[in-house]
Image (cartoon, rainbow, N blue to C red):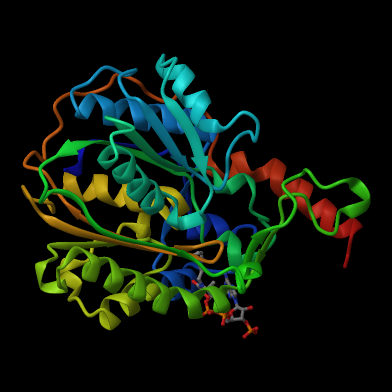
Length: 361
Ligand SMILES: CC(C)(COP(=O)(O)OP(=O)(O)OC[C@H]1O[C@@H](n2cnc3c(N)ncnc32)[C@H](O)[C@@H]1OP(=O)(O)O)[C@@H](O)C(=O)NCCC(=O)NCCS
């Protein structure tokens, strides 16, 4: 029995932060950001990660043609949960009106959705679950230091979800690879999510410790190895893959992965230009837009490959089902946002500038 995707939905907040906006408060410019990363703009959320997730999940369930509360497991992939206790999956579950499904968060950074999809497959194949909602969602812009030009330019907010249900044997997750190498883990770390005791505090609350070169150096071989291993486990080769949907971290990483696998650019999907790196949301957001653009046909073979904090790496080979059209639509929307992206960020920026002035080391 394969576990296939029967519904999909996304939700990105409306406020757009362009590279030109960033240049208004950081020592950077559009040319540098575009040429080094491919990113032109990203979204800044005016609501919590749970609210983004509820809308994405509701749209995915409507696309699957089922009621909003009709699932028996919810896997929430996020590294930026609105709350730690209880898990954010249960808050999404509550709003959707479901009172009995299993609900868990997985924090594996940018690999979150890929891990979640592989776990959903296992739960379905073992008979533990019959309809799993997998959400990838992030509100990373509240844990970024907006005074740091090397990392603030990279990330954005968003959420996307899929519904996973039993399908035919040649469909669904055909091969997967999940891994973590903790040794270089400090290259991408938020050491204090506001919960360190004051005498232990060594950095700004929410400060991202980030070594972009180290992450880049590990990302390309990590995503290539993950992709090859998942293909081998599926008994398939790259020639069988209709579309590669890589984690959308940086266009240079995506291009390098494409060259090393190898797979030609026409079979690689990117949308990071518009959203930046949305971590666990990046692959499902790209999946939704690829479907919207008609890039995924009936029974297509897809390869997802990801890399992220941990440092984790993961890949899934997914056999799509027959249907590429949504069965229904959800009426859920985000509340209106009356502030610009820069206005939304201003309080964080003021706080962080003050913090750095008062703690010059
Ligand atoms: C962050 C990243 C874009 C930096 O690109 P890079 O080409 O490696 O750039 P470097 O770090 O070598 O910096 C080159 C110079 O540009 C400067 N610079 C860094 N950010 C800048 C910015 N936003 N604008 C202008 N200059 C910048 C640096 O200070 C450095 O200057 P120096 O040579 O005088 O010291 C790249 O390393 C990357 O994408 N890494 C992976 C990031 C990621 O997405 N991780 C998430 C998990 S997958």
